[in-house]
Length: 463
Ligand SMILES: *[C@@H]1O[C@H](CO)[C@@H](O)[C@H](O)[C@H]1NC(C)=O
Ligand SMILES: *[C@@H]1O[C@H](CO)[C@@H](O)[C@H](O)[C@H]1NC(C)=O
Ligand SMILES: *[C@@H]1O[C@H](CO)[C@@H](O)[C@H](O)[C@H]1NC(C)=O
Ligand SMILES: *[C@@H]1O[C@H](CO)[C@@H](O)[C@H](O)[C@H]1NC(C)=O
Image 1 (cartoon, rainbow, N blue to C red):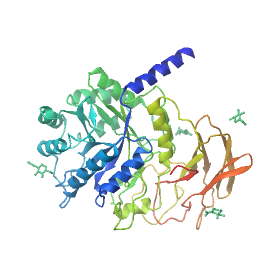
Image 2 (image 1 turned 60 degrees about the vertical axis):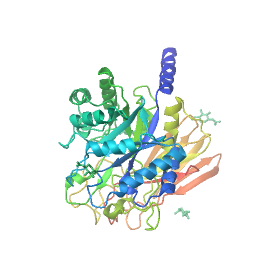
Image 3 (image 1 turned 90 degrees about the vertical axis):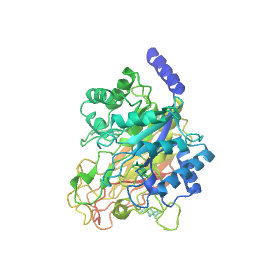
């Protein structure tokens, strides 16, 4: 007991001594309507839960005609970030190859240099930190490309590279140590790594930290200066509805977010940086940001097209309450005091075997994996009873206390025809009702569109 405590104390001291920064992956493609104030709004909302910066994901601006506005938005992002004390790093999307236009080192170097003097430019060991999505699957990139970019930058603004090379992250789900040792030997140019695979890969199993441990120790054993960036995500569901079965899948994500965030509070894995996937990737259903506006004149208007079928009306904002709790814990080395009474709850809007009229005719890969259930995560300041009602599954109660979060779930009832049922969640103490929330969406088996994206609700303050 004594030695475990001593070890925990040492680990938390080490944690304080390291960077302990949190980034959120940010899709620049969704900022067409943004102005500087809108950037500041997003950044302040992210800061409120302990996010220190955005990793700006973008594709080469010549990919699609008229995409050169992305450069202007990124300039605005730096201006906004300087004003609110926020950080930014570039995350060059190197997976996108359909346009047959690729990043080149001259352009990347000029973009990196433009913002190198900004107080918002994120640095690792005094180098500018550069990340990617991909770089291993498109022949135009790879180790030589990364080394070339580093060489180009060396004399003016030296960089450290922590790319997300998805083939290695995926194979680490099967054999972590061999994937990690291949990574460091195939990529001598990289300093750190972003392990993108934040979801179980086509298995009905909870995520483990084994791949994270393997990548981190492989970097260390080769003397790479890091950072090791651990990806943490609440969900994964995507349906491009394009006839390609590879573009329609759900990952087993029922309790993924609190589970993976809790892993950070153990000594099993202590990354240098956490990257939340994501702030605003609506397409893959892992957004933590508020839903964008549907008003075309709004500064956060986003055109969602078909994916709107599973995004509109499905807020995830209350998940930020869970993130805030664990990120605070991770940064400070001890759990935060619980001063409020909150229950975050989430559920999908139709049972998994419902036959819906719209959506991919090829079906959704892994759609038998999620539980048909309403999940709840309670954080209360004093002993409380949490009462959940899901249609005929009435008043399923559980007890929560202030020792930490308590999880529970209530299965969907069998009769979900017609308008279905709307989950209701309440917090009670000493016979008094402290708060109650109806979900903003009903669960119904009469569904117009296949939808494995959950809606997230909140009882109590916090948004
Ligand atoms: C480099 O990329 C930029 C941005 O996509 C593009 O405008 C420029 O033409 C490219 N340069 C070369 C030599 O390909
Ligand atoms: C995943 O973890 C949750 C607890 O957070 C547990 O209830 C569930 O059964 C686990 N799932 C599997 C497939 O082991
Ligand atoms: C609160 O609940 C715990 C069990 O979770 C119990 O041990 C404790 O005595 C309770 N405290 C009060 C004040 O009722
Ligand atoms: C919540 O649902 C209950 C039961 O269906 C209903 O009586 C109540 O009016 C609802 N509350 C709100 C704010 O819609």
